[in-house]
Image (cartoon, rainbow, N blue to C red):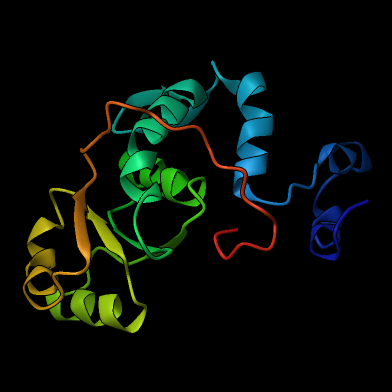
Length: 168
């Protein structure tokens, strides 16, 4: 049975295609279910480079431990639309954390304000947005700053996240 929100999409597709849509309780559940069937397929094309679902999972699994052990469940992401953004977002939500997406064009004062207003445990940034984290680092040292290029030597699988968790 489709959820009421899924029914809204029926008019945009054929019955055959609509019947293939599956309901998942969480992003983690969906990710675990589709990964085996799509591992070799292209998940993301960024700057002329193609990344497979398997590569995306490998990179997300190496990033997941950096956020899964943090106290608090809100992780800010200050990264432009890119492969790195998708990797970090996937790692955060499949670790059972809530991704708070910040537009990369925000000034440092707004980054600081959002960090405080939403009680971020961490903020993930990239080279292009690194300078925007200085005010947050100076005034809120409790918020961990994590570069998108960091990785753990001990990859972690996607967590079993219940459907009522805030990250879904």
